Image 1: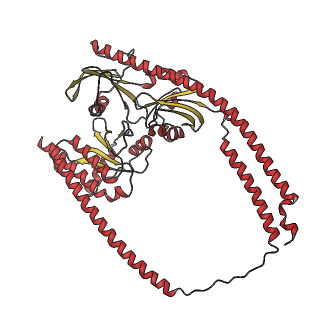
Image 2: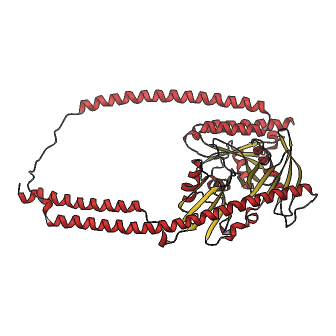
Image 3: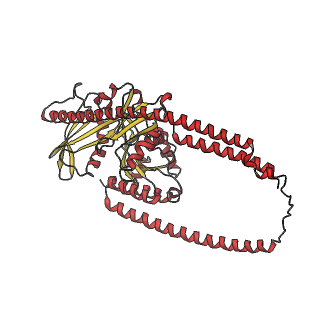
Length: 512
């Protein structure tokens, strides 16, 4: 070998290349370090400012909550018949406790409030309250809509005393005016599903943060790790980069968010990317060196022409084919056996549900049990919406299959007349109508849960006249959130449970 070629690393061209690579890398490291230091100082100031605002808002929220409780008690001690404009409540109710039963002793509302809306949600409130261990001084929060077609939601607070309680409904935008006092910083009150309930900029009220990195990588991840507060850089609802500080208020399903926009001059320089560029440049330098060395030594490399060796493979292929066919046959036998076992277990499970449902004799308890069994079948969270004909809307009644603390908040969607007509037309053809493509339901599920692919089936009954009426009545809607293989495999079982529940409800109406 030529000595000049064996000492390639002493060539001037190579030395110049290496020096340039390290010089450029050093410049990038120094520049990025300076920008990172400047950005960190700015973020520390922003963090301290937002932390102070967060404490102010948390204190203001608690003060407002105490003021609402005081005014609710004052109304209870008076004999007023109507809520005036000066009152912060849209509706007020005094609750009475009789053993495990909760009832309304007295009810007062504003002129703009609708009785049908309150009665539609009250049953849901009571059923949830009865599942909780209530004590004196406890406060519970619920969400509801005055208009099922709107995304804007109201809040209901339940204050519990020794042997009684008060339930009030308020508009969070008007009852928490302190959110609007901030201009450069943005303050908001959101639900655990990402819906904006109150905001310093009113145009954001009713929007959803569920798809933003602020909610997905910040709030949701903190709550899943059992942390009630957090901070960091995220992309907010409008896709602007913000520095945000957030915390869950006590044990309420509410999160207080304070954020400030980061200008382009103060965006954080990510020091990790600098190291990536540094090593990338080094790799480019070594790659150029490799190409240079390979080209020099390729002139002395002997050329070898190797021809591939031909090996007869006919017998080997034939033997492999017979083994493959035998294995596939065994696989089909095992698969059919497993499917048969699954069908038997499914049939037994549905029979057990039908037996339980017949014994319950209460449509509320039956639909709850049906939702639980459906979640067990499909390995998916399931929802059941109860249809209220007087307001032409379906309201969330039961949920099952969710992790603790991640059950959805109050939901509802409008039921249009053309949907009822389509459901009856499908029944006349001997089919069960699917609500998978029903846009009001699809929109609310996408906004509240982020789920776009689901299955939904109606629970129907012919009413007290039976099939003689010739017209199906909608009782409720069963939703399987994570539609997939399990929901398809058990679809017949789900439809069978829906029909059984409908028949039991029909017989209950006939016998009453």
